[in-house]
Length: 352
Image 1 (cartoon, rainbow, N blue to C red):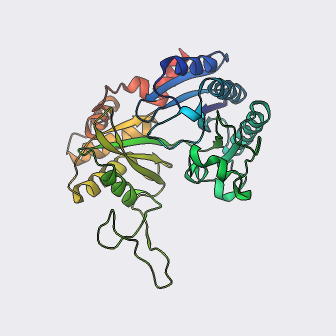
Image 2 (cartoon, rainbow, N blue to C red):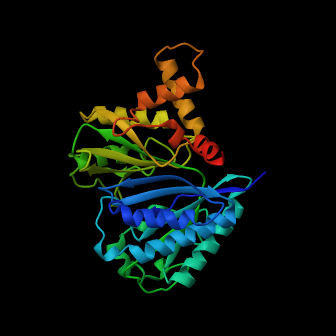
């Protein structure tokens, strides 16, 4: 079986189309690599790029993109809604076919070393490629964001895995890792309140939230009998979530990463967020997919809503996909074309 590796780098630029096009051009110049999708957000000031191909070529394309971003993006000037720590904020490698996660880890660490050595950009390795346990979590690596990076890097436990131990003021730090396929998914709310969106995110994400006395948003933290804050576990396994307000949409969102869509399914996340939102007097109006999605995730969602709506068992694959899109409101903010958003369909189209 041909080895196929996917890379999904996130760049801290979502507004200047010239910069974004130069970064994607650097990727496409590596022959054998296929650019699958480009997703830019103005308010987040962030672009998520998806490309795939043979592992060694994907790693080369990732390096070229990181180098291009380092030349064109100045983190000293960057502002955006999404947490970030570097010009290339995070760069995960994802095994798609014919390659194991163990092999992917080696490619990720090799890329991290090269970025550190040749570009003088400090690097943390995360997820399966983490060299230190507390760096497995992307949120931990990104904590303090760019503004807190100079202080953070002075701490022994947060010195880079590769590259200089001093701050690269222009490029910040890049987080490189190996992980399995995840779904980046935002759910839209009929409110502009980031506080309410965050409260919903706190309840559903696996890490949960610290319990408060009285006001669930602004009340003081409740302490246990030894004086430590009480943490309440979230309702969705393998889900990370934050809440924010997106000015360009005029509404708040619960922004999530589904780390294992086979265990915690897309429709389960949608239903649970809808339930939590309703308890707070908020209505879910639709949702938004960032990047690409596996076909199986949409088929399962379509099958769930088919059963919920008591529709015929004879629904075709295309009908199930459309039912999932409509039921999840994936086309609320912009048209949703399955041929451009489903991984298998995009790969098939690009291979022709």
